[in-house]
Image (tube, rainbow, N blue to C red; front, side):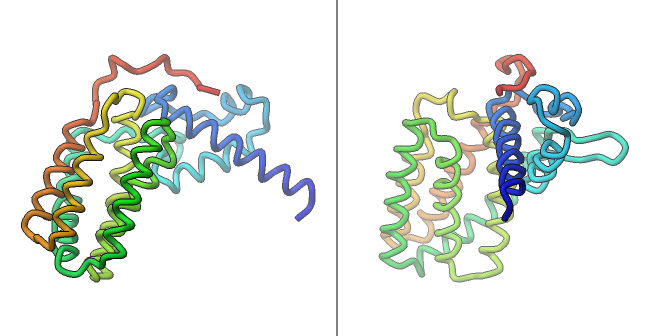
Length: 227
């Protein structure tokens, strides 16, 4: 790769990171339009890396591009988020129940280790790592169900709903993370091979997550780039 290509890739990554941070910290509000020219001017770059960044964010689900209108930060309704979580609840209750019957000691150890990492990343407000650990926790349980199709569906719905949590339940607003204790309860049920308790613990956890989403705009920061 040429030096010019490396510089281009680095610039695209820098622009992408700054826009994503602005979205995740809600300095760019849900529903806001991402105007290429304005962002390029703000960052003192050409529109090319901005366009690439927006395309990547669209692929990840943070941005919706509408033909002849432009790119907008997603702004799902409360009903849409509840619908998504109702689907996730059905899928993950089933995966937890199956996992209780089939999970290995090695996977139980992995889950406890992930909980420790969740605690560490939450305490340091390491947002990206925290959500990565959280998603991995749910993926290991789904994989332990030994149902490949169910695992595929769980991965898809978890990725979709994690974006909702990032946008509407920011870590910096939480003094205590209830998910930690809820995750521990899930693992203990799995460890004891108690199918019913595993399903109930997963249901309680996901119900708690949707109840914690903050849909009001009264605590939003000024709608500017945090760059």
